[in-house]
Length: 280
Ligand SMILES: Nc1ncnc2c1ncn2[C@@H]1O[C@H](COP(=O)(O)OP(=O)(O)O)[C@@H](O)[C@H]1O
Ligand SMILES: [Mg+2]
Image 1: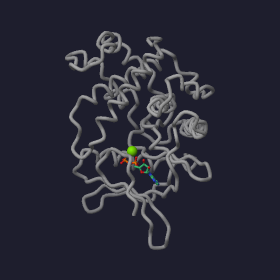
Image 2 (image 1 turned 90 degrees about the vertical axis):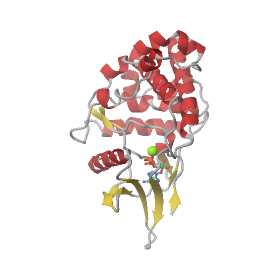
Image 3 (image 1 turned 45 degrees about the vertical axis):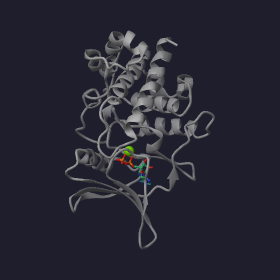
């Protein structure tokens, strides 16, 4: 059994080698854990994904011995390298674009729309403005009111015809030796406008060392090209607000790497906002 690092959740995620030498990937969460519902949600989504979707097949899901358990096909792959100059970036962009086409119209019924599903948490400036933290950066402090206004605009453009993964980042992508890209962890998927999945690559490219001008990697992707500039800027502001807000909350038990990650993510999204608004 090979435990998979890289995630932030305290459940079990492991690649299994079975007696007949076949593989399986299992993730499990205690039924009492607050994230158990996210695992159930993931099972519902994974069970509804079409075979053309670039995802490992869900083999079994259910409750066993007090755990919510999901068993998938094992993907023998590696996370794509998102750093500047990496040859992995173009295939990842193409894979996300193709995934969005495959998942339009949304194949899973009765999902919450993005505007409320993500809108409920993807924000931060309005709350931060009510009681600004002492260590808030000077630029953010100076622009708090504008940021609070900007961070809501994307929500009225978030709903749409697709199934949206909702958490696209390198550790949810696996590149196989054959060059195929599999998208994993559908726990945050919802019904919405597909520009969100392609836009989610930007902060992760920046976290990997790019400048926000890395947006140029998305040129030619229709969901990106068709998204309104103001909506994308608002989306960047919402991420910056969310990560800034969350990075000031106590880390949940058993997740020690989360806060440093959130600090870096917040700085990244702020750089993205500043790039998009011309505030160097
Ligand atoms: N089907 C799979 N086959 C092989 N590895 C996988 C598979 N699904 C996920 N992984 C690996 O396990 C890690 C954690 O899986 P993920 O679904 O993101 O769990 P969590 O809910 O803990 O975030 C992923 O980042 C990926 O590296
Ligand atoms: Mg994950």
